[in-house]
Length: 254
Length: 309
Ligand SMILES: Nc1ncnc2c1ncn2[C@@H]1O[C@H](COP(=O)(O)OP(=O)(O)OP(=O)(O)O)[C@@H](O)[C@H]1O
Ligand SMILES: [Mg+2]
Image (cartoon, rainbow over all chains, first blue to last red; front, side, top):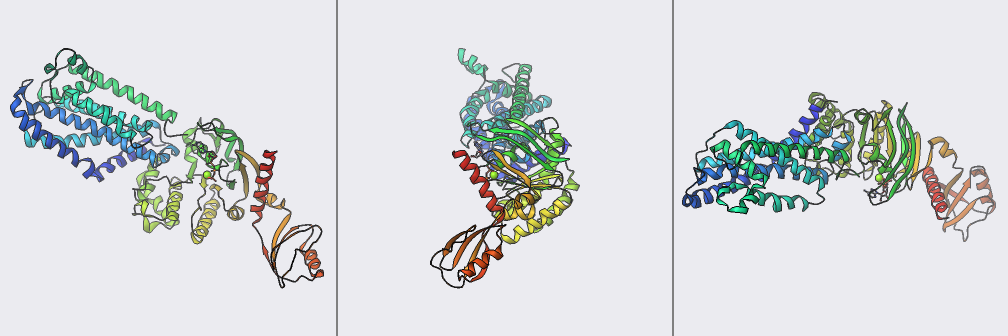
């Protein structure tokens, strides 16, 4: 059994899928983020002055890029794997001698590439509004990769448990989006007072956003090493949990 | 060697329904095997377990000597399945469905391309290779699933009602094809509700009802056990009532049609001479029902009335 071929087959299929429907997958984030940059960055940001030693637009660019990576990695895997289940072609994978880690790896790869593609598009758009600098490319790239992996895994788990199309939008709408907005994309935790600061620090997305911002502009509210620790830890945890779910056949086998 | 062995296979679904109540089954390598049974008998459940789509509650599945639990990949590589319901991605083209399938089995791209050409040609789908599959007719979709199942050249092909909803012409060409594939050494297990199909194609047979095997033998001896023939007789002149002949069951189906059940030992000669003694002239004779169908109904009925008692 050649798992490499199976892995490539799933990953390529997943990547084709979202590129083929790029007006639904790559265009909307370009438009939304262009509006963010215009309104928050240019129009409002002009009056805010500098945050963390950077102009407001420079400050929010990294967060907006990472926020797009998060939501698109997640939604790519959750919608693709759920529809694989819903249309029953998951059965093709279950019948074939494809190891579970290959199934997981294939779908997660699709989510990572989607996240990176959207992140790239958003970064390009941001160039129109602000000069993007890269303070530390290695940190940028590795935290984006880890974050995309983490949320692809989360999307996968959501899809495993989802039993209807409603179930695949609940978590993105009610958990992911609020956490992203509160994850220090638009503000520095220094701006918060007392216990609000403590609450904000309990949000894992805050660490990823800050680590990425550090990679781009050199400013951060938190310890970057801690951010890598937290993100990597979650990746390991969710990988093990996903493999366990596949092993048990939760949501996909009777 | 057995292509497939099931031992004490049980399945209770999560809602508590016991779909399989301990099934034993052996299918020899090279066989063309019919798995029959009424709706809801448990055929697809059994096939689901064999193909790793359903978790068995207990029991073992062995495919060409490979235990499905202990030698999962080896067992899986031997099996090709055509499920009862369409389960490919309807937004993909026919050829990408086949090529992806080959990829899942680790078949290198170049070989996969050759095989997809072969399978699609065999299934008369080559012209459709670039069509998005949801645009295909129902019969074409079934053939896509057969072609897909053959992409990794399985030694055991399991077909769950492949000819349901397929027109006569294509059904005949599918029969021919199945015979060919079987002739080349592939073991075939077929479920169908068209019993004449099973009768003409299959050498061995199992009948499953309410989660139990109620019959497991070869087609010939099974059919030989059926010792009553059913006919419809078309008469020259109308009759008012069914004639009475001892040893034969006769009903008047209409003015000029009699419905007769004749034991083989009685013989048609005797029947006709008795009828002409009573002044009844027979113009033609028709086989009332397929023999296997009759047997099937008898077995299921016996089972049902047994259960009622
Ligand atoms: N997921 C499920 N949950 C609960 N019960 C199920 C499930 N799937 C099937 N069953 C039940 O198990 C029994 C056997 O179903 P199965 O599909 O195996 O029958 P079958 O012999 O293939 O019938 P058919 O000829 O109609 O295809 C049926 O009573 C069915 O209602
Ligand atoms: Mg069935």
